[in-house]
Length: 183
Image (cartoon, rainbow, N blue to C red; front, side, top):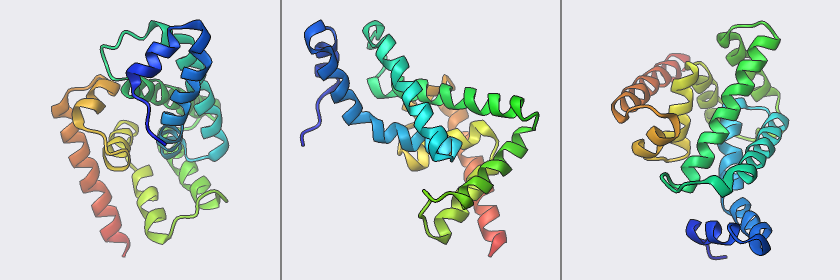
């Protein structure tokens, strides 16, 4: 199936009669990418499903106001990332635990998850990623797993490209160190 261009989706969304069709095209194009982006941040499948739904509800409500000063997918990623960070912060506050403990909790749910079917190396990588501070983890996930360019990540996170490169480099070094020391 041919991928529909963002401009066509936006044009169809601007017409009342084709708005639902446009949104379905948008979901087809981006829902899976957004699912995996959020999943790598919050780990739990059910939480991810909820956050994907919340993300696309916000996209639906705000798409008519999208100004096209960024790419559509970076705008959606920004919404998904913000929803995920808000969720993790609420979880941290609700359970009165530190971010390090949240990472430990996420690592436990990763190993217990019936939805995780990765091999041992993938699980070790995910566990190592979960030891990173939140912002480094987000940057690492966007660069390594989502294969986003630094300028796209910069647009999503509102951080300079130089700072992103430094954070990614530090994250890679930490992950390498963890993986090398475990074997």
